[in-house]
Image (cartoon, rainbow, N blue to C red; front, side):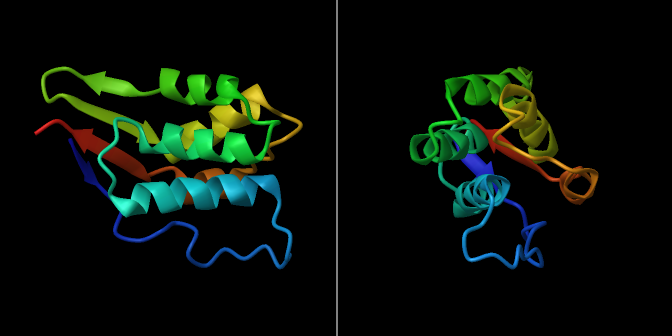
Length: 119
């Protein structure tokens, strides 16, 4: 399996100005770190969210399952596509008290996606 990572992070210029970043920043950073690493995983985004869930008990398997359910599988090309925007929406739906998603963030990541292909 091969990961085609993004060329740059949509959050490179984002700063929260807080030494104790909010949970949404930890989620975003974990997503980006995992996606950018190019690890061979079926679901880098879900893996990143699972890692965040271990550190933050408010994020349970429900959030990861919600994100995973949004993956689109193209059987012909054996690829999996997942938009980070959808992932953030899934988290927000599963845990509205723990995750804050605003329109600006969604616009920043609307076109960002990761493609995993089976070689």
